[in-house]
Length: 172
Image (cartoon, rainbow, N blue to C red; front, side):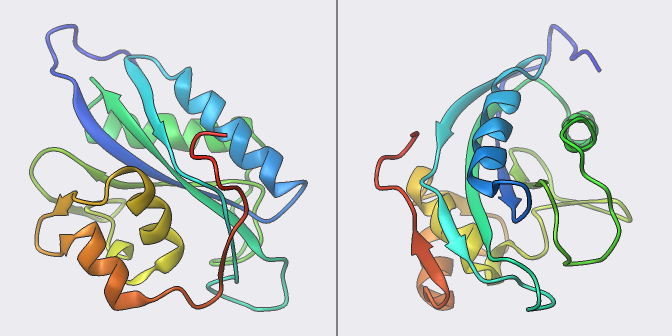
């Protein structure tokens, strides 16, 4: 999954979530693994947030965060790297919105919007999910996502119901 050496460095943002097998450890490990992706640099880490599950409520709360990357990978290459990272960490896709050891979603990457069956940029849920917008605001509050507005505008619209900040130091 090598990037073209002539490719430009582009910002990208990845949502991280876990609610199984020591979720705080899983999220922190995901940050470390993201830092090791080829042609990619981990530039920013949000705080960790405890959140209620989006889907079925008979599962543990989630730990959520967002990573800010600079990457030479094209969006499809980056998505492939994220899916491989999930597999390497033990992710098994069994139930939509169900419990998971790790979940990595490509929220946005600089470039034209993409609307394909298996890849949408910006991520279609970004504007409505506080467990994405609050951590994203930690690292990119003024980021404008095309067709949606700024992260701070979207965060104000969704509110903070069900969120708890776990750590106060960004990047810990």
